[in-house]
Amino acid sequence: MLEQMILYIRENTLLVSLAAGAVTLFLLLLVFIQVTRTRCEVHKICKKIQKYLDVIFAEDGSEDKAEEPANEEVSTPVYQTPDECQKQQEAKKKAEEDAKLLIDVISEVF
Image 1 (tube, helix red, strand yellow):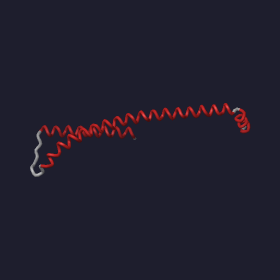
Image 2: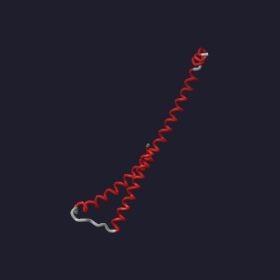
Image 3: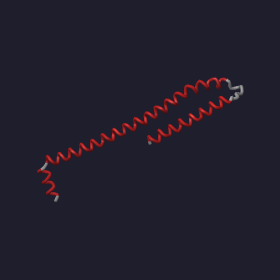
Image 4: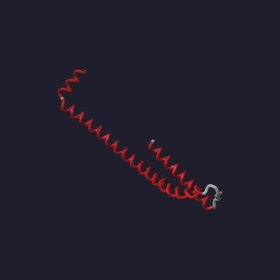
């Protein structure tokens, strides 16, 4: 049986090489499709990360400006108005939303 296979391969080298070439091209096509799909997924994840970083950097600038005057007056007690309490609650909600967005991005990556 083995001798017959070897004899067939020796007599039909063109057919065997065509079959090997077709299998190689098929495997290369599968690799190309997989790389393209992975590239699209990475692009989507990068967009989400960029959106998250835009939100974080936009909030960092406003928080730094608001915190600087409060740090200078340490000796006097500071009382909060209802507007300030509402702003703090909104900031906490935004921080929670940002945390959820970051968790979603990380879960998609891993």
